[in-house]
Image (cartoon, rainbow, N blue to C red; front, side):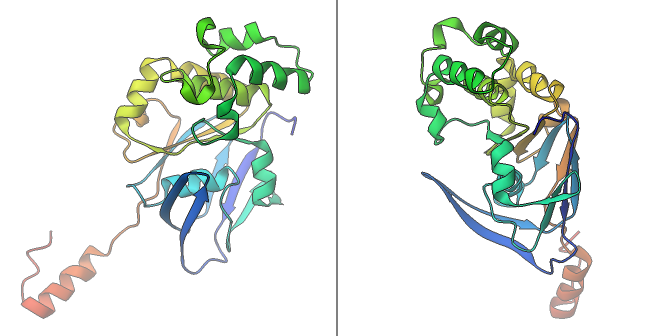
Length: 240
């Protein structure tokens, strides 16, 4: 996929229930529930997928990364329907832990990716763009701490990936990673025409660093619940 500008669209019009699935991703098992919604995303942006833990943000993040079956959903890339395997070819997990590439060093993996893509950029170019520490280039990606996501972003960039997704993380995690210049790396990705998805439990911090927050928590029928309590206990004031 060479074009810079593109759109991703999720069509849920044929869905009548919720997605409630368990995905096994190496050692990383998670259960997440997402209620069907039609959504659209455009390249060059960072999106925060916001929900409580287990309420959809990670599921949707991994679905957009081609790691989860679409079930009854239809997913389109520039209005061309795609399958999970199609998205997986252009997607990249920002978290190296549990990924095969996490066993490689940043130097070896990036140099190999640049060579395979006949890139005009050098390791030094990538190192400068993503602020990679020279002393850590020969450390396995999964062993890196504050630099891990920047190094992962750099490798995905070198490979020409267009969709960058992530697992669920807390506001404290994103604040800590941004303190080590994560935003610089993510903006290098969006400048190149990629989409970035950050899964989070709250917008408390991430709303300050993304282009758009997408709220996924299910809406609850509070009025209906009050009616039930009024009928059962003649007191709806317990719920407000």
